[in-house]
Length: 188
Picture 1: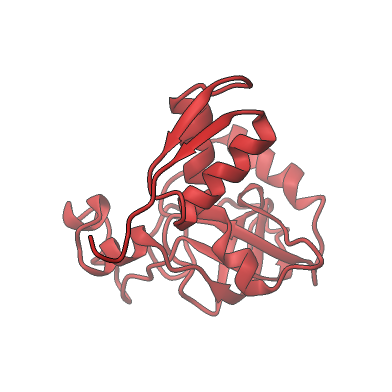
Picture 2: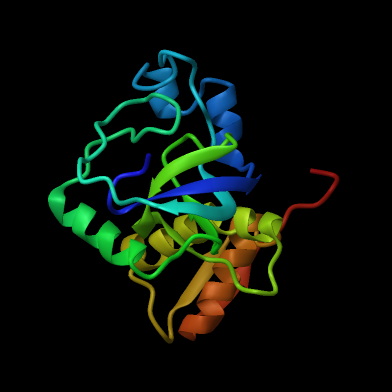
């Protein structure tokens, strides 16, 4: 049963990205260090998903940080839970959503803090929704938080034809940033 601020989502599609491949090969930091991966009942990989809200949480108690199937991997502060509760108040059962979580999306259902999901645009499939979050968050964080990019800047984007590269170009265009891109060739 989801807690207040959580959504129980029936997962319809998952994203598979570079971090998931590294997780499967035990090369991703939290797996390699042993922080995650030896959970009772088995580790559930997966960072991004799309699905349908089955239940908006109302349970008063907060979930404990556990690595059990469908559980949170870290404790959330009360401030974050308040944000999750505000987000949950804007969603309802039957809403099509996409989101990201720190592992656990390779499942049929998951309980997810509501601030980690958004509605899928009406004209998108579940597969399109599942492919969007991690690349977009990665690029946005790199451009805005690490690079402090702003209108009028010029950005060099390597692998501009890849998933993150294409998303970086789209975000730069929205921000009024000039893009110079590189791509590989089949001979390399």
